[in-house]
Image (tube, rainbow, N blue to C red; front, side):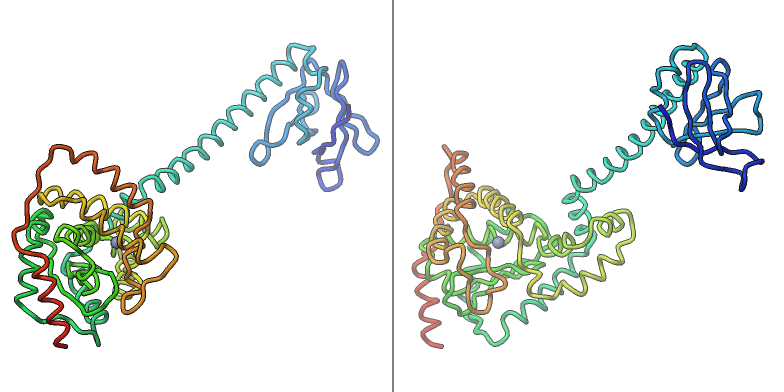
Length: 372
Ligand SMILES: [Zn+2]
């Protein structure tokens, strides 16, 4: 079999020339310009070289000025090279080196692959770590700014007795959070749609329509447990950070948070930054459920309210009015199923009976709205 190669010798024009290599029974022959150079197979030296060790070189002690090589790896399998111990040993060494080289390449590729894999596996932990670097007062400032944007031109209920009752009734939930970084404040806005939303830092806005459709404090607290969790889980900041590239996030974890803070300052006050992913919705459901349990409030109110929400706003229908963009994601079947599954944990638990009448509260709100 003939292998294409290159001969290197000073006497050749330009120092090198294409050649044909043939492995015979007794020698390796290089034909260049119809001249045949024969390296005895008994003492030919075979080695690897060139860029990334891709070439197989043939040298011979008797021809110190003449070398030839080929990139055709098939030559290593040429059976004539395997008849003689010397050549066989050479080929074996070359093959060993090739395996070694490949091991290194595979090792390097594997190492970097692993790093990238780790980056993706720990992505959410990194995002959380970056979010935790953001001072709570920054969140409150952004939350206040968003509050003004969202409520401007809309009627906020100013009945302090009503708001006080709402705030007081929600205290067990707030206590369950047990974190002074957040300042929870509850507001009611006149809007007939079934919605409530939380702003970073702790302002929680409830539509009057949501209260009108609720039939118990437990239902309202179910929704608010969910909203409070968006705040405590810092979904607003995490949402913005997660839209950044993984390497920006990594560099912020390692120390240089400039890019992240720049983006936060830019995107933080944008209403669309309050749109949460399905994962965050699920997380808020679960965390909210835990807060309700901790507060000794029957969490099944969350499920019964979500069912109402699902009926009112099927998954493909957008919420209208001021908060289309802020809408709690539709109460999907998946979310309701997920919560139903959790009711199994409730066996034998006794919950607080909330003493103030929800109907009276609702009626007072209705009277306030009628006066407007
Ligand atoms: Zn939500």
